[in-house]
Length: 206
Image 1 (tube, rainbow, N blue to C red):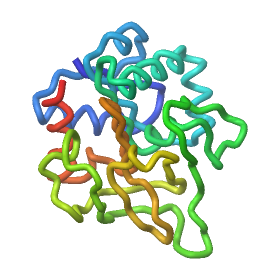
Image 2 (image 1 turned 90 degrees about the horizontal axis):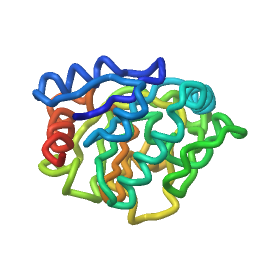
Image 3 (image 1 turned 135 degrees about the vertical axis):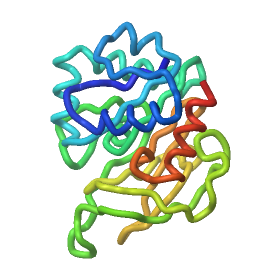
Image 4 (image 1 turned 90 degrees about the vertical axis):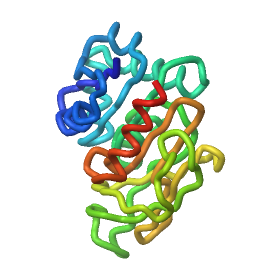
């Protein structure tokens, strides 16, 4: 079963709809036990870095989410997929909320786009340059277009964690991956056939 973490906001229904279309067993849940024991965990993200973390703590979801992500990153069982803000939350901090403590699973920075260069947020379709062609990205063509909506972006401290890159005024890490943990700044569930291919790959890895 795939647990889609429900922290009270986010693109939960669109993620579930895509997984339902693929015939994947999934559930939107805020039950810590279900999240801890799920074969796959998805952390969607819409909202502000600090606000979402505050809500996750209040609902008892912060630690169970961090542990699920840590296990996946260490290759110790279970798959984990972070989407959009769900990618940024895997890092220790963000310029969006300097005082908020992130999940701190991966090393790197979350920075705001320089507004003087291009319109912020970065919204719409953009191409990705793949550095990984396995796992979530198996069968995804080089230069594929995917859908973004964000004002902050990730720069990983570990080049080997970077699975895909994109440029919007500045280059940034569109996807990161370590063992069974993967996260995308773009929305696979809103990225047409390419995004469905990625989600199907995720389901087939369970």
